[in-house]
Length: 368
Image 1: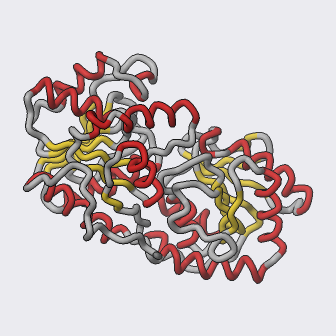
Image 2: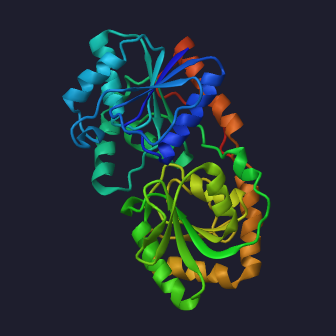
Image 3: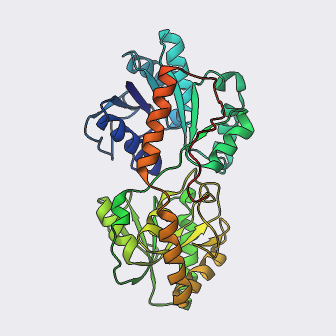
């Protein structure tokens, strides 16, 4: 099977990490896998057996959210190789895939790997617009969503019934032996508003008044070692480094405005760290307030600060959440998700059923 993933960027972020996981598994199983992106600059290295093809850098970042003709034409040339299945990992790229198939007269299948969310105001509206064009969505051969919440969003707008295949966690994090905790609160992700870094900063300014010895730490590939307005910054190097930071943190904070499936909180749970988590579509599959984490509303920096201070002071509660978190994370292993994803692609290529069909054998949500 010749598989092509379409990504809007080669930056290091959750959506691309999920793509790389599936790409690496498919390549290891003997499939021919290609990643196509519109830019040459990259932060990610392809797994063994996976090649990267770039369409040259498109002007600005409009390609993310537009039907930019320049990129449509470039992408069409990249998809002229005779792939069996093309997988956009960002919803707007489904338009580019459909255009290329039409212009080429090709027979490749198109499977949307839905990892987006509606929370961002204008981006959410754009996603709703695309998914709401039912005549367009019917041209897809399948939609795979990474969480039940994400699938519900797609179904409500498009009328399709996506297959749900939750993301998983690398075994590396489960092998994290208990280590002494250090007085810091960890945040993983780019320092932007979509990830809630500004909310985290405001929360930590309040936390330092109640617990002066506890600092905030940000780890990201987008920063250098140093400090941003009172928050210590650590440049991301590799997964082993991240595992160590998770394991030693007193508390982990997930403050994103939205996610299709938030992986960092689960990784922190697997490493035995208590979490404060924003209540969003992408965390509701596994985050249970007062059981395996503390939930707060997005943007509520005061509520976030209170939750952090509560975990700092209440060792018994923190220990209870750490134990429950490990159990929750144990339900999300990559092996089953990767195999299920491959099976879906083989079915689509071999005998493509009705678009958006409900699959009675679709993988049940872990932990439910």
